[in-house]
Length: 203
Image (tube, rainbow, N blue to C red; front, side, top):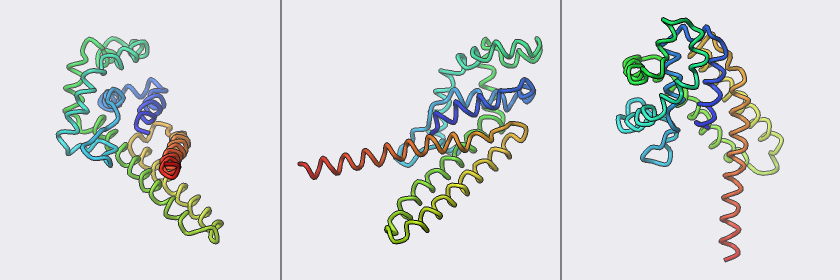
């Protein structure tokens, strides 16, 4: 999910040259894309905690390694911004850009917070669905309606969060993209659990 968010949201955000006018936010999103999905000390750490110095150390480690490459990918676009503005995204100045990203309270930190909120909503939904299904077949219709209602509520919350983060960007496609990945991941997880159970029974 984190990898998918980095791919989709950066592509959707940079669909217009006007988005590069907000240099702090544009550099922050580029740095966020350069980071790898979070891996915390515990299994439930599925997003970066900006107050956790160890996690942020890992985050900046990957940004330092990958930021140059991300800036080079943007270079054909940023060259058209003019000599002054394009300099703010010059790959040769990657270290200076990273310093700016670290100092700004917008950009990267906004993206990490948005990501944390989205992942939290998804985890809540993933926890809720098995609980609802456990109510049994006699309430199948009511359970299906409740699951559908919770899915709509979850993705409405995510869409609202994204609008607050970047009002000018069109992130309306993100909830449906997330739902696709969420459904695939949930099905894979269930299949793995069922396979383990079958293996134990066979043994």
